[in-house]
Image 1 (spheres, rainbow, N blue to C red):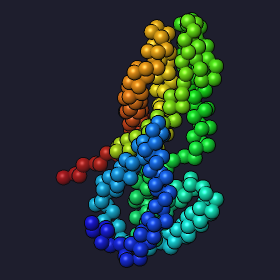
Image 2 (image 1 turned 120 degrees about the vertical axis):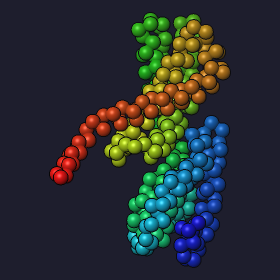
Image 3 (image 1 turned 60 degrees about the horizontal axis):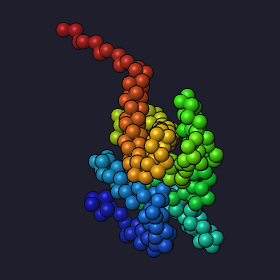
Image 4 (image 1 turned 90 degrees about the vertical axis):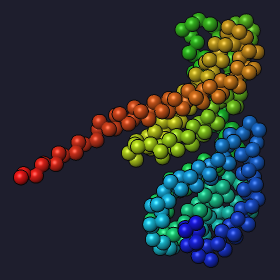
Length: 291
């Protein structure tokens, strides 16, 4: 509340104008968040998590003096140009990115460089609510789907089950077929686990390097656990049929594999904490004062 009272009248005018300009794009974003089978069902939580990050820093933020930084005005002008061009070309993705940078511009202009630097992590976290372009989602999903299918099928070779894959289709000797769909490709898991990894890194006691490394490791952890999920479904389909594997078991495996992914992420945190703590230089002993 103290911080809100320190915002000048011009700041509130800019915020109202900003809300008016972005009403339609934000409604499009909301539809992407609430779309059945979408990749951004976590989107509505992102602003609240970012606000919580700010709240945990409130004691530090309230001590930072406010000095307007004019580069913030330049960012606002550039974002306005992007918004105008995107509107003329009927392109929404650039508007979404400009939306987040608008917030950075407001922060710089109203509160200054020190405040923007102190709130950099909560601001960057907001990118997790920005939907990727549909074409990019389709491309990434296709590549992931083919890769995880091929890897999961190759894991069955030591068992001589004679499982064959063709694209994202998995064929069994008894004639059963298992299809790896878009959701099973793992993109949603990667996005969700990256967001979770960012929060985990924010809460961790790791160094900045360790926190960044933990965040980066979230992506391969998501991919590995998704491959394990596909492999588990292949095992179930081999012994009990594809109907069992693609039914309720498929839905339960989605939640179960997220628990496995979080456990692996915590293991990464534990190992990083052990490894990096050993590499920290030992503090020199303080000699005792002579009587």
